[in-house]
Image (cartoon, rainbow, N blue to C red; front, side, top):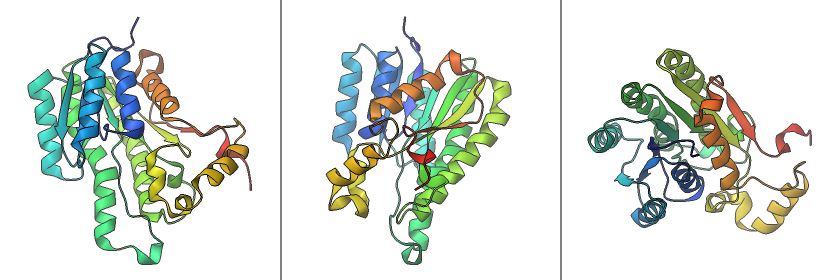
Length: 257
């Protein structure tokens, strides 16, 4: 029996990587999925094709969630197409990876708007659509950079810390509406996003092998691992998990180095 029969899910940034895997997992569990992208339509359309092959509906919507007008239009399209929403996965993220003394105001605004502001105002749009359907679930994707210092990650890390704080506030205020809000904080996940980190660009394979050797679980997280946890947090079994950030890194961050 599927977890989300005929539920409506929005996964922001779902053309590739973790977002795509989450979208496909929710579709396999019975949900119809809104596939959101900003720059690259082709991967988003490919994700939609895969969702439809599972017998589910897929709506592809171009929107930069960091722009308030785009965010408003995104939710308008969802309401027009489906009349409501059950699941919001706040996955889209961006940022300028550079040392703190090289950060610029434009990079700060860009990063905070896409990564954090869009969660707050997206939740404002999502909540009434979820109320129409008796409640829902919101899961935000964070990272260990919210609480740990990663190379050239200051602004993204600050935005992820803001995401985790918003998750707590949203969880408390939306719980009476039967809307459950949580976050998932994966460790390093093997996706093309690693290409944007200078530390990985020259020696990705050796660095990944080193991190795997230092991880108690013996391997890094995969997008599929993250998707399984996200699906659980959206399920009835997680109804009493409220405002939490679940770290999923195979134990890597537990060790003192």
